[in-house]
Each structure stands twice: as C-alpha cells, then as structure tokens.
Image (tube, rainbow, N blue to C red; front, side, top):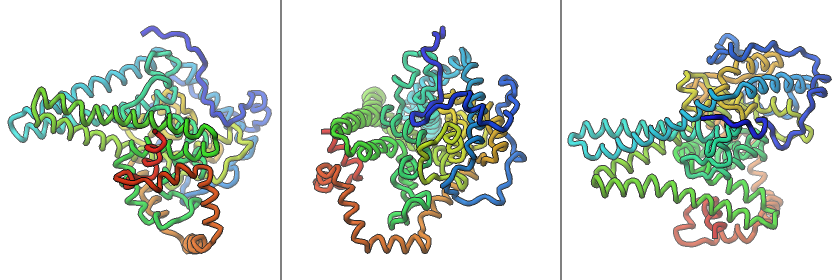
Amino acid sequence: MRLLPPVTTPQSAVPILTPLSDTRLAKNAPLPLTPQIPYSQLNDEAINDSNQPDTSTRTRYPTVTDKPLSKSQSDALAVELNALYKIVMDSLGSKDARYIQRIYATVVYSEIVARGLLAAAGRVPSKRSLVATWLLGTSLLSFSKILNNMELGHNVMHGQYDWMQHPHLNSQRFDWDIVCPAPLWQHSHNYLHHTFTNIVGRDHDVGYHLIRVTDEQPWTPEDRYNMFSTAVLAFGFEWAVAFHDIQISADEYADSPDLHKIMQQKSRALFSKIGRQIGKDYIALPSVVALTLGRRSAFSTLSGNMTANTVRNLWTWAVIFCGHFTEQAHIYTHLDANESKGDWYVRQILGSSNIKGSKWFHLLTGNLSHQIEHHIFPDMPAGHYAKIAPQVQDICRKYSLTYNTGRFGTQLKQVLGRIYHFSKPSEKEWQAYVQSTENADSDAHQEVKLEANLDTESAIENTGGLIRFLPPVVRKAILYAW
C-alpha cells in the first residue's frame, strides 16, 4: 500500500487541557531531562522486577486529594513525555501500516477458517473428532474476536492509525465486532474516560455504575453483591459497554432541550448494532449452515459463536479491570480546574496499571497490558508501548511516581481483592448509610435530581409486560428509541 501524506500531525491532546508552550514548560523545569535512548535501540521487554520501587510504605487503595507534584515538576515531566511522544510519532511509516493491515487480515482469515471448522464439526462422524473440531474452531473464533476487539478495534478507534488515511482503518469509519456502536464507545471511553480518568463522578468507568471500587463511592446494601455483580459484568461485558453510554448520556444531557433527540439517535444506533450482531452470530449464520449442512452443523456453529463471544467478554473484562482497579490504582476526588498537561500525565500514570507478559500476551490484550503508556499516549500506535515502557518507567522513578506493573495473576488477584474489600462497609460507612436513610433531605435531593428527566423516568417505572423485568438502563434505551 502506498502511504499518503498525513492530513494532520498526530497529537495526544485531551479536550479539557490548555496546551502549554515549550517556552513556558522549559522556563519552569528545574530538573534536567532524562537522557533519551535512541528509539531504534529500545527493547521490547518491560523493566524487570529489580527496578521496581519499594512497596513497603504504599497505601492500599490510594485516593488523591492534592497534586503529587509541584507545578514546576509536572511541567518538567510534560516536557520529557512530550519529547518521547514526538520521537515515536515522527518515526511512524510503512512498517506500522503493514503491521495493522496484517492484524486486520489475521482477524478476517482466522474468522473465516474458524466458522468453516464450526460448520464442518457437525458433519464429522465420530464424537471425539466432532469435539476436537469444535474446540479448534471455537478457539480460533475466540482468538479472532479478541484480536478484533483489542488490537484492531480499540486501537484503530482511538485514532492510532488515522495518519495512514486508510479507507476503513480509521477512527471515523471503523466499527468492531461487538454490540456497542463505535460512536457511543468513543464518547464514553475516548472522551470521558481518557479525559477524566479515575475522577469519581466524572469518569463513569469507575465501577461502571455497578461495582463499588473506592471509599469515595458511598456504600449501599447493593454493594454486598459486588462479587456477583462483577461476575455478571464479566460474562456480559460487551453488553455493559454497549449500554454504558446510554446511562452516561441520559445524565449528561439531562438539562439539554435536545435530550430526547440526542438519546433517540444513540438508542436507535445501539439497537441497530445489537440487531446486526445478534442477526449475524445467532440467526443468519446458523440458519445458512442448517440449510446447507444440517441441524448438527447449525448447533455447532451457534454454540461456537456463543462460546467465543463469552470468552472474548471475559478476557476483555479481565484486561480492562487489571489496568484500572489494582491495589495501587489511584482514585481522584475532583478535577483541578487549572490542570496542566503535566498534571494530566501524572493522573494517567497513577490511575493505571500494567501487566507483564510475552509478546503474544501483549498482542491479545491489544497492548493494553501497557495501560500506563496507553493512557499517557492514547493515539500512539500501541505496538510501540513495549519499546517506550523502560523510558516511561525511568521518568516515573525520577519524579517518584508509582509505576504499577505485575504479572497477570497478581494483578487480577488484586482486582478481585479490591472488589471484595469495598463490598463491605466500614463502621463509619455503615453509620453514614443509616443516617442517610433517616434523613428526609435525602428524599428531597432525589426528587430534585429526577426533575430534569421526570417524564422518561416515570415512563420507565410504569412500563408493563416483560419489559419491566429488564434493567432500568435497557428500558430507558427502549423508551428513548421510539
């Protein structure tokens, strides 16, 4: 493929930030820059355990109320990270283009082969061969869906390859193989999550409106079922992601005169995508196979599709949670109105966690195993994260910032430990809950909160038939769609 000249220079900008000039940054930077290793000499492996900072004095489940660095330090940090970012972005070229095109081809061809194996499984005479063929087809389809979701879809929709000007491998045109439409995910994830990372009340990925993961979230009796809710979220992660933006937008645009128009557009796009995904995996493909190869092949296709989607959901949930909710993932109480790019970098570093592993492991995570590097440089092609990780860690060490990384099993254990920990109230939290239930002002507050969207909320409460058994956010989307 011949590369066209880029329309714009790639930038890791966040809408809320006020850009700092190089002159201003240099003026306020008292610390010397970390020596830059030539990019071609960077290793693909992460820093080893011997370089980890001492963890004996770390606070469990830390919450940040003040800036960890002074302004001069955060500005100097920004200079170093901006320089590293520029080195990588200036190096992008045909090698990166070929890489993402190979990933795309791998997704397509592995899916074709996998679906062929699942269809053929129903025609295999022996039961042992049927099971073996089905397992092979399901595993390959799971691989294809994970690669589509993580290394291809997530990264392309972040704009990491927009500089290529490819007709469909760009953030405006690409859509992935899950039930969530790209525009809804880009609003809740690219904008809100990456802008307001780990700020309670602003970053809605903190608990996904379902799980308590910090003491900044008031305890309620429903939190006793944190572990069960987590299991439900993990098995149905693509569905939670799909309806996530509906819940967010209903609150975000509650005071807008265009609320219904906005929500109708989002809801219709969501149900259209759900219809296409269900129609493809659970109706069209099994039906075509049934007509051509028989019922056994249709069943092997349907069961393989269901299993592959579940595997992809579980894997995606595990990677995402290990990147955001380990013991040392910092939670923030508020957004500083004067937050600089350096302050934003610090918040991304402290609020993220990396996962160690092999090259294949990093590939299957979409390189979100380098969550710290992804959060400071979300539009940098993810294949470069492993190479810059040593320098990022050196910079973090220089400014005494925690660079949280560990093996997958360790990080997952910490995530589950955090979720279990916050399922139980402390004595103080229990007393606060009891007082809140006895406080008449609480009811008044809820009434005020619902006034902005009273008609829709009333309609949700009064829905009848089978729809009343659906989660409130699903009922809300259905009502807005009409």
